[in-house]
Image (cartoon, rainbow, N blue to C red; front, side, top):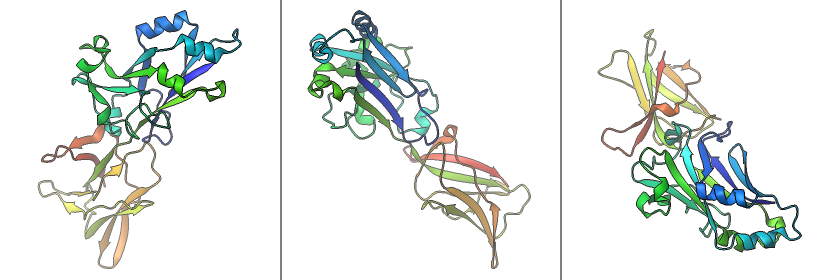
Length: 278
């Protein structure tokens, strides 16, 4: 009998499964409880499923409810992708003194394990305020803790067809200001330069010369642009001389997660820098 499943989604990914971004492992006490009750944890990419071997019971649901009355089981979440904090709207959490605390006690109809549509700052909790403080010590790469309270699970399950309950964890992709730097290797960037967008309403400021750098130009997007691992839109670098407009670079490269930088004066303003040699 499938009891529940925890499903991770990240809107950054369009063509890739995020199963390797996080590791979700039961705590030692939860492992001990599972072993004594013939319960297994199955993994399918970006989801984990709790399964009870219940083939010998006539009414397994009611029996299981009695076994888990008042019980809470827990899981530890660690980061596996070092670039995840750049491509997603997430904070680093521990060891800064906080961790993401996720649980099924929220009043969401869709059983989200966080307080809002996407996991965010409101889900961060001081380590000292967490019942699992002993598990989160310096040197441990703990990013979050998940509690599944079976009292709340039981309240949402009336028949076996309701199972498994799906508990989503939804991660929001990050949006940054894109800055293009064009290094004119052949001195062909003359006249008026501009960025032309295809398939998106995103726009860029006028392309300007960088005063302190010879044959280098730059521009910045007028608003943050969402980061994805695959884009349906593209940008081109164009130049206009008199009445003629020429495409210099037909498809500009996209930013990579490792290019994230903060503004000099506004630390909350995040940039993705892309250098293009023309």
